[in-house]
Length: 391
Image (cartoon, rainbow, N blue to C red):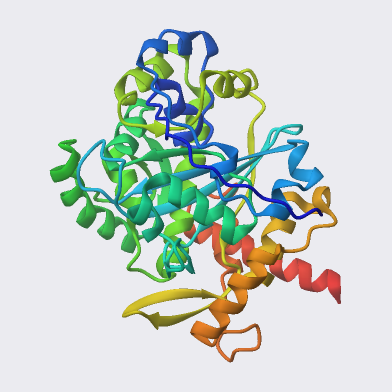
């Protein structure tokens, strides 16, 4: 890999366009190209220039990334209590959608919001604060510099957009536990107050049909077994259910979705980007999902309970193997990631040999599951099969 990097600031361009809501805001829900044209007048540019995306030098010049086999897009869910406020606030949902442009397979990576990383200007803190510290540009730069990625596109949504999108799709079907049912009923109170979207109280658990308010409440559940690791799993389960529902929807339903949320999405994607993806609407499939970091610890840093990568360099290596496999066979972490990894070790004391290391593997893959219990069961089964094979 060669080592050369330039940076240049360029005025941020902003797109609020209907189709994106379908294709990427809700995770690559790919729309009809012709309908996109009807919304051309509502487009406002807001891209992130490649030279301003903090792509590490080794990655910027790596032939694997240059050939463009994969498209990586950052999805940010803001914890803003108002609707349509995208300039700041913590990004309490951070998902990287990695699309194999040849096979149309999609992998989803949830970056745990409490992960202790470099968030710009020499500051180390929870990764979700990167958005509040410098908007979407700083959030994207944080992901690229810490994870050796080449992200240049993003989609940002808030509660209101997610509620509207799910309602426009007619709701989604998910299997929930009794404890999750109670939390959904608890959280819907605040979401109704913030969005004005009314709902009903759930009275049963198991396989249930959730409207937008209820499904958004489900995606916010954290204070149960599994903490933020399972909350990230729930968010991916919701996105998976939305993608499947969108694939089944007719043009009329998709148009209704677009109309309902066209002003509630902020994105860098252009019409050309979306046209390219929309032409393969029936081909996209979520192959697998995971959380990041893979190996971690927890520690109070600056008065906050943080997730500590153990260690960052090792986790980034595993991330690239997960996302790209043998396609990027000669990958080694960049000098930037090596440096950040050493600094995190010095600041936290956590290494790969630390006594208490959490393995989140049983929470990671939600593809094919419509419940957290189902995801855990399939992951534990896969782990046992893997051990048997190794023996």
